[in-house]
Length: 119
Image (cartoon, rainbow, N blue to C red; front, side, top):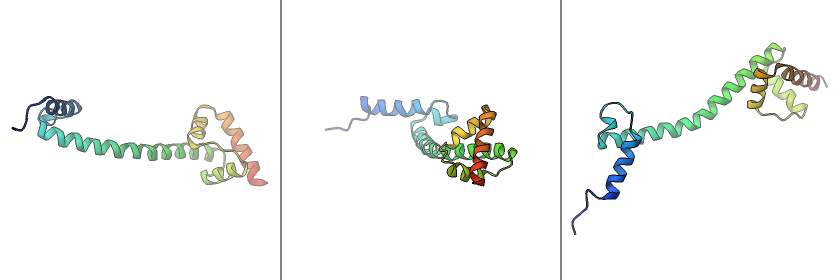
């Protein structure tokens, strides 16, 4: 029995890859051989990027908290330690958002943290 080279499944698979390669530069967007490699590599970068995004946001939140806390006279590490002592359990994303959008509440939080450090 002869091997099918132009069947529906085969065409659909190629069409899917070429659709994913839409917008790529040069032959990467139109040529099957080149596009399949480009799409595979893009998938690897995307997978890695989803992991890196989590790290990057955590760094950003810590930087923002640190800047806001330094204005209040504490370091980031002292502040986080004081929050643990005061049994205040807020994540970094929330603290960062609070430092930017609600400075009054954040200042009150820093005051509680300072009290917990003294005690």
